[in-house]
Image 1 (spheres, rainbow, N blue to C red):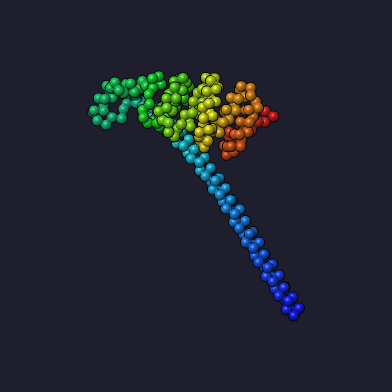
Image 2 (cartoon, helix red, strand yellow):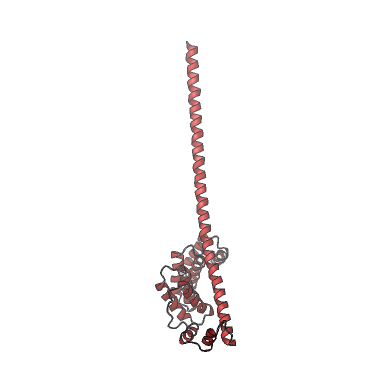
Amino acid sequence: MHKKILTLFLFLLFTGYGCAAGSSDIDRTIQAQGQLLIQNQQKISDLQADVDTLRGQLEETKYQLNQIIERQKMIFQQMANGSGFSSNSNSDSQENSSTPSSDSTSSRSSSSDLSGWGTSGDDKADYNFIMQFVNDGKQNNEAISAFQKYLKTYPKSKYRANVNYWLGQLSYRQNRKDDASFYYATVVKDFPSSPKAADSLYKVGLILLDKGDAKKAKTVFQQVVNKYPKDKNIVDRANKKLASLK
């Protein structure tokens, strides 16, 4: 009788241990799957961030290519106007080229001056047009006014981040540092994935340094390093500033 009881007790003991061991294995499996899911989600987030960065870089590259194309067009037109050559293919075009209309005359005069400039309804064309004057640096006040008008006219333009950045640059050229800081901060706040965001934040730090606020400038440079680790050029410059402020 005692032998039967002992046998039954041992059976129940090992059965319970097996169930407990099986439950432990299931828990470990669930935890491992949970960790794997979290890792995959992080990878997806990282990939999305990379995609956003690449989109910004692609936009910047497209803009630069468009600038090159526009400059080439202007050079060819100037060459054609200066030498008397034109791309006419019939007598009508030859007549028009020898006797320019009032419309074409006003177009040529407006292409060399931003005073009184008005938007055309094409945000891309207007952006490229204003950028000609930003690059030559001869009409800073007019370029600022034109870009401000641009932002009011095209509140949803994909070039708004760049426009705010260049408004910051133009304002800084004129030593209007508070205005420059405002425009740079707008890029960082409203367009954090823009290729101009890292440089904008860095330049906010430079303005703080110019004002003698080294403590806040140091905080901003550290933010550049933390927020934009993939923008190596800007991060290197921010790190040099941080090193000089220790």
